[in-house]
Image 1 (tube, rainbow, N blue to C red):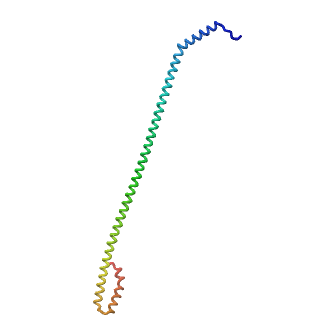
Image 2 (image 1 turned 90 degrees about the horizontal axis):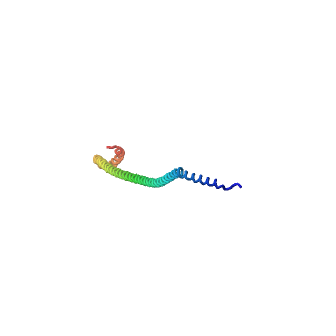
Image 3 (image 1 turned 135 degrees about the vertical axis):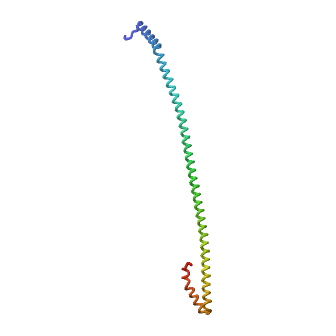
Length: 167
């Protein structure tokens, strides 16, 4: 048989085993357990720090999103205000241009009326001068009809010459 129990060998094996357990318990297990405990504490702290960092990261991400949304709103408001200002400026410029055009048109109409009155006054004066000149010729020339007819024809013949004369 291959395996035969021997009581002496069994006792020495048990004694050696117990001695090894005692020596390992005194010199090896405590330092190994201390290192394992320290490692466990380090890992636990690292996990806690990672959780805290994750929370802070999520908080910062939310803050960044809020800041970005606020910046977009402010940019939108600035653009809207600029658009409104530009629209108001355009309206003001159009109103000013219309007012200026109306004033210019009014001044032009007034100037045209003045020049028209001046032209009519000059025309009346010219007509009066011509009438006086014609009457003086009629009176100076005598009273027969043939002579009057000739004076009127001469007067009409002389009109284009006087119309071209500025004085």
